[in-house]
Amino acid sequence: MSPSRRPDERNGARPGTALSQREAIPSIPSPSSQSIADIVATKQLMLPDGPVGVRLRRSDRARRISLRLDPRGGGVVLTLPATTRLETGVAMLRDHAGWVQRQLERTAAPVRFEVGAPVPIDGEPHLIRHDPEGRGGAWLEEGELRVSGDLAFLQRRVSDFMRQIGAQRLSLRLGEHAVRTGLSPRRVAIRDTSSRWGSCSADGRVMLSWRLVMAPTMVQEYVILHELAHLRHLNHSQAFWTLVDTLTPYRRKAENWLRAHGPSLMRAGAGSESK
Ligand SMILES: [Zn+2]
Image 1 (cartoon, rainbow, N blue to C red):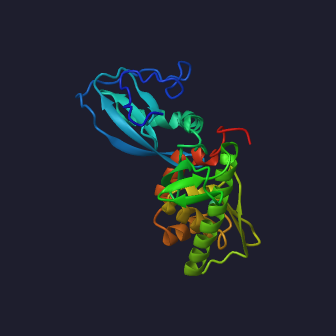
Image 2: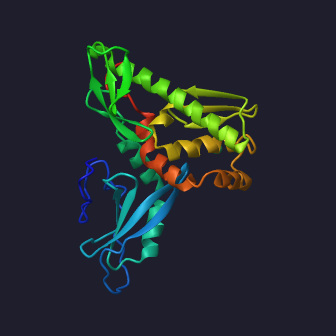
Image 3: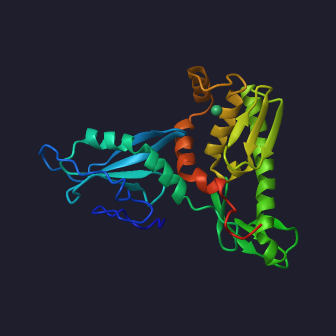
C-alpha cells in the first residue's frame, strides 16, 4: 500500500482492498437529515484476536457506505453518505468484521531481508547495507544493519542476526520485568514462531517469538507482561486482564499495533529469496 495515497472517497475501487462486488454493502435509503461533511469519529471494531481502529468519515459525494483499509496503515476507514445514520454504519461494520480481518491479513507486506530494505528493530527502521569487505557477518552501525560476505547469503545472515538480537534483547527485558513484578517464569525460551507472539505453560515456562524484537518497545513490554501475568492466571479471565492493566498501560495501544502491523512481522524474511 502506498502510504502517500489518500482514500478515494467516491468509489474506493482499489483492487484487493475494497469490498468486492459480491461482498459489497448495498446502499441504504436513509431518512433525510442535514448534510454534514467530513465528521470523523473513531470506533474500535472487535475482531477475534483483538480490536482494530476504524475511522468514520462523512462524504457528501458518497452514494453508499464503503469500507476499505486505511492506506496509511493501522486500520480501516468507513465512509458514510451524508444522510446515513451513524448507527447504520456501525452495524454494517460489525457485519463485515470477517472481511476486515481477511483484508488486514492479506495486504500486510512482509518485512523483507534484502539490500536497501528497512528492517525494524525495537520499532526503528534500519536499512540493510551490504558491506562485502566487512568482518563479522552482520552488525549494527550508524543506524544501519550491515552485512558482510557474499550477497547470496545476505538474507540468511540478516535472519540469523535478527534471531540473535531478538533472543538477547527479549530475554533481557523479560528478566527485568520479572524482577520488577515478582512474576518469575521457571524457564524462558525465545523461539521462531510465525503464529503467536508468546505463550505461557502451566508449569511456568514462558515462550516469546524473536519476531517481537521488531515491534516498538511498548508492544514488547505489553506482550512480555501479558505472558508473565499468565503465571498467576492461566486464562483470560477478568482477573487476568485487571492484572495486565495494573502492570502496563499499553494493552489497547499494543493490541491495535499488533493487529495492524503484526502480520508483516510474522512473515518477515519471507519472499525475499529462497532459503
Ligand atoms: Zn494470553
